[in-house]
Image (tube, rainbow, N blue to C red; front, side, top):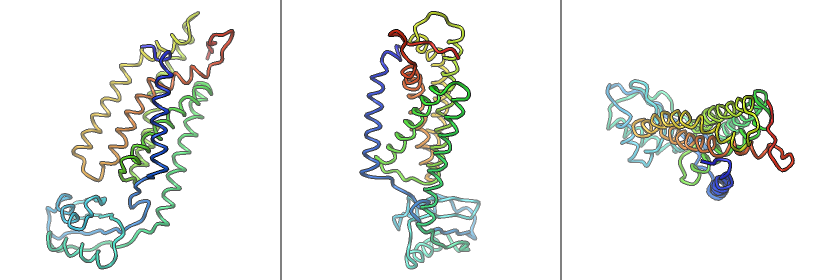
Length: 289
């Protein structure tokens, strides 16, 4: 396949996806969870052994709280839900006792929106730092044009993942931020492998069309790229099916990001670098690295 020759098709597709993501973000926004919006945190430890996540979540469904974050450690459960008033919290706790036996209430507190705003700020700072460090690393290891192409590909993956969660209104919490950071690391890893192959081919190849060299470099790593991403996708799909509500959004964000990462690695990043190489006498000049 002529990846470079058909790059404008992939550029157009990416622009459409990016436009949809941006429109959805500004029109619908993100569905922030308790970590960002504030809410109620309850921690209970049951006297009776054998209470499961499913048991507690079934009880929460009676109050429309089935999507609450739920973490279990032996017979102790941490419940993070939308902010509940004192009366509603009492009803939830009474229902838990009626259905699953007596328990000790370890924590009963509200997480205010001020904490949520701070988490938003820290999450954004973490992403910015990750992008800056990536571009410095790629520029140092290769050259600045590679760094710019790589970062543009990473922005592409991050924006589309955010747009996907905005479009379908999946809940965004701290695990989503962790997933975005993981996507950045995973995606750039595959991209760097192809960049490295381009660099090696530039050193060993003489008098070859640059577009052909880029296409050959992509093809030489194509099987590796798909195999690596496929094995990760299988694990994430299993986590989606069997991991439960707590890890669902993390696995979903990672799966979307991995798919985007394969697309940008194969169809965008190297083509962007090719477009950044200057023309000399109407032809692309091969840059010796």
